[in-house]
Structure formats: structure tokens, C-alpha cells
Image (cartoon, helix red, strand yellow):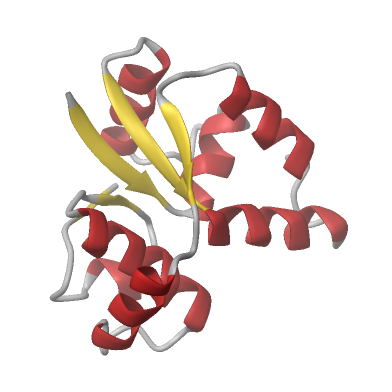
Length: 130
């Protein structure tokens, strides 16, 4: 079964059923919804969702996401471990810390990252899909 990691924008747009979601990203989320692939959600994504929802910048809330994950076997939360932090140190071409940790999760797991972010998409350390 194929496996992926998502960034914050990808997950938020999926949950909001946004038309701005990338075509390939949409297909992956649809496949996960049908039980045909697995999408890992780094804890950093949850932290960003908490922050953005508290600032009223998005309508998706942390409880929305946790309930969504609890109701699905194909979406899994991935913790920030010491291994993720050490891998983040190696991802030298992504300067922003939150993005670096999300990217490092994908690198550590060896799965493509669903991301629209242009800096992440240019990284030589991982494959991205949008």
C-alpha cells in the first residue's frame, strides 16, 4: 500500500474540500479516504493547525483533525521523535523550522510529501507531490 506524508496546507485543503488543492494531492487524499493508501500527519502539522485556528486564520480546528484521524485507519499521526529532529538537521535547504520538521518526517519515513510550498518542493532531500 502506498504511503505519503502531508503538510499543513494539503491537509487543511482536503478537510475543507478546497478547489485549490493540487490535482495529484486530491487524488492521494481521495485514495486514502477510500482506504487505498496511508497518509501520515506529522505532529508539527497539528501544531500549525492549532496555531492557525486560534488566530482565526483557518476554520479547521485541532479537534476536527483529531476526530478525522480517529475515524480513519488510513490517516496516522507521526510524532516528533529524536530521529525526526536529527533528520531535520540534515535537511539543509529548507530554512523555516516548521517546514524543515515536516520535510524531515517524510525523509525519515522515505515517503513523498504532499506539499504546495515552493521552498519544500525545491528541496533535494525529498520527493514532493502537489
